[in-house]
Image 1 (cartoon, helix red, strand yellow):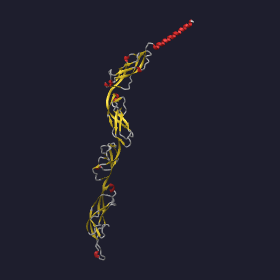
Image 2 (cartoon, rainbow, N blue to C red; image 1 turned 180 degrees about the vertical axis):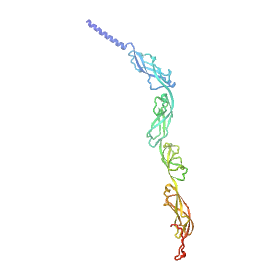
Image 3 (cartoon, rainbow, N blue to C red; image 1 turned 180 degrees about the horizontal axis):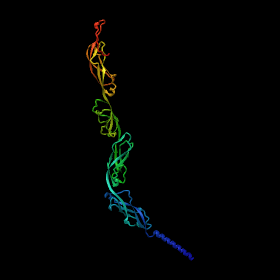
Image 4 (cartoon, one colour; image 1 turned 120 degrees about the vertical axis):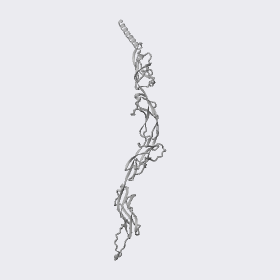
Length: 419
């Protein structure tokens, strides 16, 4: 019985000891240490800009705190702490700087060990601010037959600021709009972005204006004929067959809908400079309120010319319509005929297809006459000269002979024209 009681006492002692241990672990006053990592807030950041510095983006500011407390108090999370770094309290410069942190809030009954020894590393760059132009980019194509006039944008410049390594990359601010198949005027408000010289967006910079207003007048195109202007005169040996504009019509845009323009004119072409068939570059005369969709404002004028040549032929002068009762004596029986005309026509003229004659149909009595020498040529030539222009014709009656009367036998050899 006594041995049984001894074991019961031992068991009760173990239970009591274990209970005391549990109490000490969970409720006791002894302290433990742990670490907790919390974010650091930067305050008075504007003072950095005032000192012409910038905090480089992409940095994470965290600090690991050593804390002490009872087991029940030290079950912590980062939201229970507030840690700040005051940018206005320390000397700053370009590069990486160690900034001490201040613990502004922590849990009750928790001690932060060595609270004055924590810091973060912050990297600084020079603060830069500059002005860049604003550019508007059009994407897509308008509806067929429409044209976008020059856009009006506001503002035309913006200020970009931030760390030098980013700001120095920025060359302009851009906005874009797709105008595919549009046919109406556009009034837009578009977001701006900073870009480098290759058009790639530069991040981590600030624009003082983030939106641009854009107005784009959209006008319908028209096709107008080209009027070719000339000056001077052609060389004597050149005949101009045609002048043709290439293209002979030009697509234009009229800024003013009431503009009543029906054709486009060229600058004068100097005819005296044309010596052969050729294509002549010529500028279009600009007109107020008219936009030529021919980018360089130059067209070609195709000149087709032919040389003017002359040819001289010698022909016998034939007689037409001589009265049968007369004979005719001519002061010259040949004439030189000179023709002037297009090379293609002159080449066809020869002694076989040209005639030279005098017409005596109006002569009915003897005498001496001055008769014009005529020509017949199967081509339309306006410049024909004959040398001599006139000849002398002596008209005599034919002598009649009496039968069996020897005294009437007179031997004459008159010059007779052909019938």
